[in-house]
Each structure stands twice: as C-alpha cells, then as structure tokens.
Length: 203
Image (cartoon, rainbow, N blue to C red; front, side, top):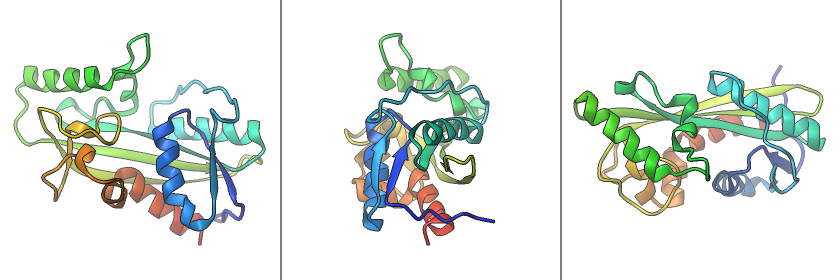
C-alpha cells in the first residue's frame, strides 16, 4: 500500500546545490521545507548499483536512517541512443576530473564520441530521473520521469546544470540551459518525476 508523506520537513539526499534548489522550488507550494544532506553534515554513500533506482534507494535510505527524517533522493542522468544508453548511471562520472566535476569537458567528450561514431542526426537522447522517498523505518516509494529530446552542438545557454546546454527537449528550439526554471520544471525529467511523486504520496 502506498504511504503518504505527512510531514513538513524533508531531507534532500544530495550534496548538489542545484538539485536542492529545484526540489525546494517544486515542494515549497506544499509548505515543505527542504534541507540537504550536506547541510546536515551527512556523508555521501557509495553508489554501487547499476540502475538509477538502485542508486536512488542507497542515497534515500542512508539519509533517512542518519537523519531520522523522511528523505528524498534522485538518481538521474543522460541516456544517448547512439551510445547504447551511455553515459546513463555513469553520467556524473563522465565529468570527474580528480579536482571536481567538469561538465563542459563531459559535454565535449560526449559530442566527440558521437562525431567519431558518425552518429546520424538528430542525435536522440533522454534525461531520466528516478526519485525514491524513504522513511527511517525502511519503507520507500519510487517514481520515474523521462524527458525526450536531442543533443545539439555547440552548447547553448547559461542556466541549468550538468548536460543542460547540449540537450534540446522535444517541442522546443532552445536547450534546457536556455529555458527559464519554470519552463524547464514543467517538462523536465525531474519535474515529471516530482509530479508523479506528488500524485502518489502527497495528495
């Protein structure tokens, strides 16, 4: 049986400030205050699964257990058809440098790989997000959202984060990084997943 969320404080199981801001914007109308795992001084658990759901579960349960509060985690990434679904769960890894994440480098690497493969245009891709809402007693609920689109080059736009400047969602001639936050939230993988989660656990 689906469990409803009834509190007013939720841990976002992430150290990513961009994700905290997105979730805070989406959940604020419900009177829910979001606090990040980083704000609570919680460590980042190792993501050892090979699926978005598996890794989201690891993060949500670790944060819920450590904080004693319900925790919401997101595992998301970019899947590219011509790359057989890569980078997928390893999306952030493609940006690792040893001195932090460099998504400009990751975007350049992704496009160069597509050029090397002579992948036909349009270069179809999807942003995917899986959300897990976990409680301290070990229960969880999960949903997923997908945004369909294509990769473009050169990258465009200054907003958003990650691969947003090279992802043009279907129905738009602008990239995620050129959309307003309201426009992006309405169509994004994370926005769709949050809508599904709100319908499932917050009504």
